[in-house]
Image (cartoon, rainbow, N blue to C red; front, side):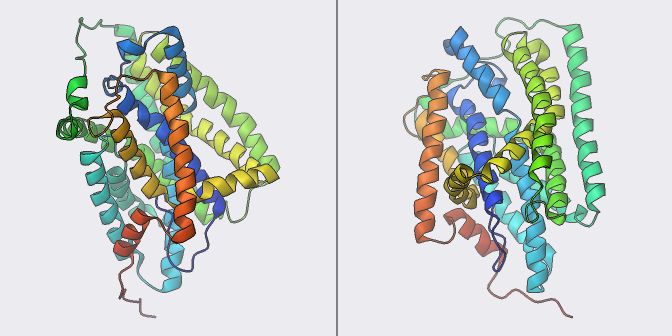
Length: 392
């Protein structure tokens, strides 16, 4: 997630632009866990279940859900390979440097998950980063095969179980999903923290054991892409267009099926099947997005957009944490307590306003400082003052 890869390493503006784009998508997914407290239970608030509200949620799931944390993961793997190059140039051992970095990320993730957002991904990145450290020696071809195998295995398992659940169709008892305690979420900071901690302890195993392997798969793909220098030696525009034309329609069609099952069919009956579908096909939709964005960056207008996005991508770690802080202030008892109060269309408006503010503030910060505040903390942990050199 962090974009600082060591002194002397050139920045890749496209990498920063893609990372900022991923930030937007992650914000558009995470906000529902704050705005609609039923989301954590896999439901939709009864207060916002009109036809128009459902259409907005359908669209948000279609375009964003399950697509952007895998892009973040891909970029994490890409940056990991750049960090390897930096360690080689500095003639230092990669492992101690990486272990310090992952330990710092784990501490930030624990703090983030406990204090702000129970769906934190940083701790999972730190754990899966250990696996990437061990697997970094495999060839790019083996990395791609391993990543495809992990994704296919996870998706197949979910689809098979989902089919069984849909076929059995055991109806839930009335009130089987307890209503969230909106009063506790909005009562005040201490009460909101208590609810978040409770949810974090429930969510952590799922994040580690479901999102973790999928994140590792994307780490491996990103690492393989960096070793091939995909962004350093840009792919031809023809190849990008061909990939987008193939991948994006398949991804959108599958995402539409997933969204239909969740919002216009029987959510309880089909939720596992829908998750399996998006697990299998979300990488295609994400690849389509990336190809279109890279093509856009090659146009004059796209260069201006890239100039707006890149500063936020350079501060991705800071911006990820600030997003959770801002959402806690808007929706919980930490601040305004607006959970379950805003209709879905307004929630998406909050996404636009908050992300726009991050673009502006990131640019202002980097006009004064060379690095984001949380990136500076992680860099200090990663690169000690007296790092021993390798002999040779």
